[in-house]
Length: 502
Image 1 (spheres, one colour):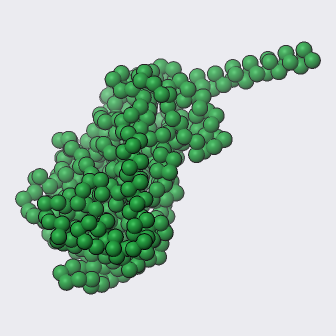
Image 2: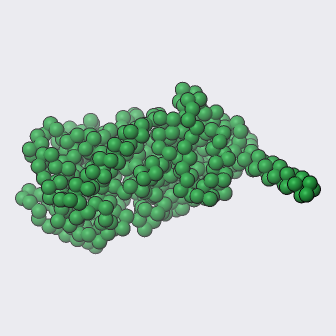
Image 3: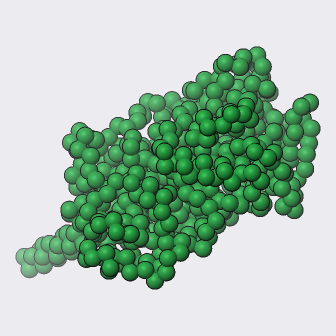
């Protein structure tokens, strides 16, 4: 019996030693590549009470609408006029969006998320996270699989002549500026090697110098994200956002064991104000408002977590930290449009089109793509949408006064946009309006920046023009570099770019 017990003890020690070796090999103790902010503890960049209020108000909206859609969308106090105040606006956005969304499965007939990769011993998480978010943004805009857009993390992190080595930390915004201002090549031109050398000749030994073929015609941009609901909206539109994840010692063991047994398990972070010793840059590809958790794509290979993914609770571990949380978007030269069957008159002075909803559609997503107010879209379809909890698939919806660049007639015939307007820019990236609008001198540009205001004012005149605000609660500030990208795109809008259906 003693021999058996002794043997079991030695077996346990052996397994423990293997686990230590595995963790040490997978996660370098010196850090993960994102600069550690000692002023940022591991929790509370948002508050649960605020998030719970958002979801509670959204549920109340859904219940009221189910009880009586016409009453819910009539009069100055109607729920469809929620743009009158920021709390109501958020409630409307939450109520008309999926409660749970995973870009890997919910984007439509394509998966915009590229395969999980392994940074190995190098501290290159920033390049992997920014690259993942950029690949998702381009794939979402083009409606193709993320595996078709493979950026070189080696080029982004080390080249040309950036004088960074394998163990040098980096920050997210400089990496985004590198993405926007320079051309990052295809991963086949410069594969990732986890280089141990700091020699530029070895780090940047290009096979070719071209970006992925799928993104030859277009531009990247980025925007700071400061609000959980805005971040969720960005995921639905562009597949992912990039942020920090503060690393505590208990996470290594948790991610090595728990998600394999339960992929929906949620990491909660230690309840401590002690700054985390290390930090990782990650891409967030989904959310779960039921379990109050983000779905995170990591860069430690597919053998960790749930095939390289894990879930972390809202408002902890530095996720959504101000200054470290950004949405990447992609502006293609050829826009994907909503294909409409034809026109339908709803009321005098409005041009409305019939659109058949697809499996991946939500009201919020359609409104975002067509650049119309969610409240107006819902009010125009009261007779068709009877329950916000049911899928829209197959419903014939009216879309009234959309940005002309966002739609095309059946068969691919474009609906021409007026020359010289900012409509196409706002359609390609609504986030761009804040950068472009101050430089425009026309009323149409202001309307493009806040389409919800004009649409809601037309539908609900009793609210008064001064009470209407855009649906998104916060508009981001824009850096000079970001504005240059968008100005270049604006300058190309003398003639509307060709549209394709999708």
